[in-house]
Length: 186
Ligand SMILES: Cc1cc2nc3c(=O)[nH]c(=O)nc-3n(C[C@H](O)[C@H](O)[C@H](O)COP(=O)(O)OP(=O)(O)OC[C@H]3O[C@@H](n4cnc5c(N)ncnc54)[C@H](O)[C@@H]3O)c2cc1C
Image 1 (cartoon, rainbow, N blue to C red):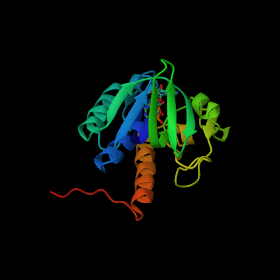
Image 2: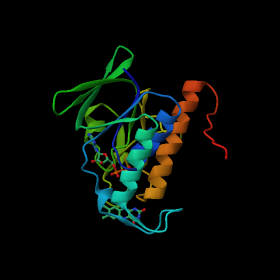
Image 3: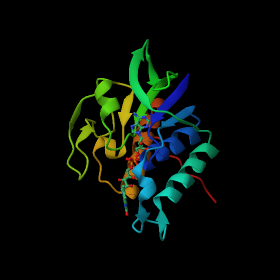
Image 4: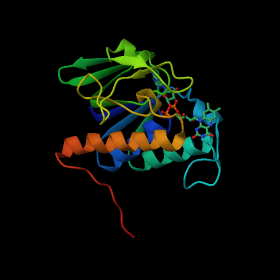
């Protein structure tokens, strides 16, 4: 049983995974490796002079793994509530159980729709449908959160990665019962 299962390994999902695993939560990230960020050339990501989307995602993966995130290639097809936990089923017939789920599935809303999450029309270019979330990132199903393009934020890596971190911090704050802060010192 994982504490947190994240679906989607773009900037939003990886950034969320970095925070949750660094905070000691047993984290699994499932991604189908079909993300389009790999094709981007980034000249507007604060703190990085210029890098490719491929480099960003590769560094993000290493960072999340270094804090203990398990990353597995998988196409998740459904999420079911199973006696207080969530059962995620993949196209290949594997199942994974998690106490909480974060959806960071970009512009693909199929999983959310198949899993009974409320959606609404997206406003950003190329994003037809987004998952309805409150200001903290909760969806209509308690225990399932959403972040990044999937939750309607602007389609820029600095914003989607920041949103993944923001939602992870909100989730961690709920688990800990007080506002969570992750600061390291020199
Ligand atoms: C060609 C191109 C150029 C770009 N240039 C820039 C730029 O210059 N600057 C900039 O800031 N941004 C740029 N972007 C935009 C930026 O890459 C994205 O908006 C942003 O990274 C989206 O982040 P995300 O994590 O929310 O979603 P994504 O990066 O889309 O990640 C979602 C991931 O979830 C996976 N997924 C979806 N459903 C499932 C499922 N059911 N099971 C498993 N996995 C699933 C997807 O395949 C994907 O890997 C560009 C994008 C493209 C395509």
